[in-house]
Length: 628
Image (tube, rainbow, N blue to C red; front, side, top):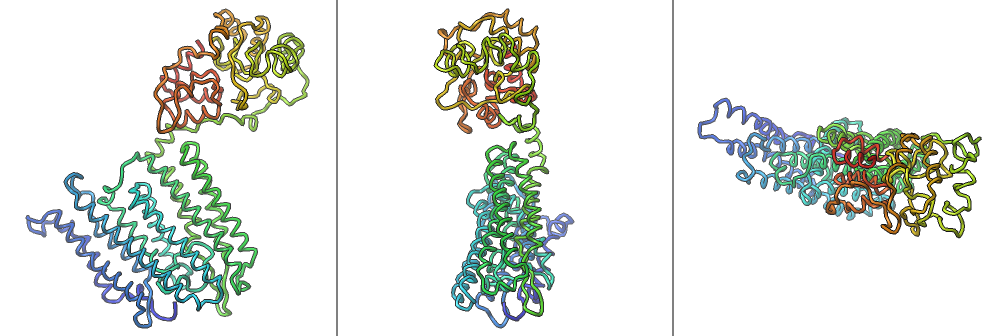
């Protein structure tokens, strides 16, 4: 912008008059309650009078936009004070909740405020498009092609920032986009107030004749033409109770989770803008005047990509598994807060020999404060979201206990009853040795009983006394002492190879070998005693492999119909070949299938413990049946 007065901030006497009328319209409901109006005065007339009183302010904004487009006189531009005033006028004009009638009777108000929102969005879209056209017409006046490219890219980022939320509200009719848009509007009001000082580098005026006034930005900036300044007014319009009736309905907890998801999307946009615009700045002529030089720009590129990557990963996890993704989303918000402050500190400075101008834009505050605050608020403050996360705790992971749980180092001195002790019938003993080339043992070459074959001592098969078998005690591990996990290792679910299938145990297994193995487990498996093992061997034997190829869980809950929303079925939840990772996803995304997972003989102990803490009757019954 060249020299001259900012039209929007001048408070011409016309603006003063329409502002006073708008403020006085707030007193209409109180005057009606005080009996000032005649008895025939209705709430419809109060709503109409309030809209008429605030319409002049909107008309004044349109007039000044036209003056800016045609560059009347030596002054042009629309200032932030005008934008804040327009948002206030929209709030004053909208009907209150108590003034709204039943939804099936009061149909005019929702249509009116949807039209108001469309009008404001159209004004922003038209002015932003005109800004780009004006910039391209005058592109030859800029020093170098990189100035033009940087201006266009900055304009595209700003269009995406404004247009995405508006599209979600008006086209998708999404309640979550509405709440995010309201949050963005409040954030911009605060930023505009912070940037009202003469020495501030924040937005103070927008014009269709300039995509930037001093230099191209290094992050998302609202100075990329005229139009984005109307976003607070659009947010004020969608906050109306009347507009809320035009949206689709959904569960409050779902709405708040999606608010956080959308805020993470916006975090990624702002972070990517920091990386891309900083990269373009490297090729701008005269970069030697930038105070932080090349190192600061490269740092901004790297940090922007880090924030964007964290936001995208947290967004995908939160959208698919909210309970598991909540902490990731909060962590991504914290990361953006820290890195946003760093980017704010290392923002470049331009010097013309008389003064320095720090290139701090609205994107810095959005990245460091506004968007992380929206994510944290959406996932922690609303009562509905706190109740949801209290009832839906994160499911334990299917593997990874070795990273935080102590296990016996390999090669340690074997003791009596430990893995590796040379005792008959135990792992590591000459008879039935685990891993030795003997019949029915895991790893025996070219002999019956290899892994995946239905033979004696099969690795992974539910034998008597084994965890998950019909006669096994609850808490006995399915994975019987793999070489990688020593004494004390928590049993974890394993991912079988594509060509290996779970097979039922053979009825020809040697009784003495089975008793020895169960006695060994009684000494070291959590929750299993020797007495329980002896009781297990007094129970009837399992059916032989000729009677069925797969074990049948005792008293398993009846299968339910497949759930189309998540794609999991009861048969899959009961199938012993279903991996532990899939089982952990089923209990999280398909709560109605938790009893089937509890009855699955291959469900790993950590997941069973988690299911036992839920207090669901059907799940508890399935867990009791495992121990019967």
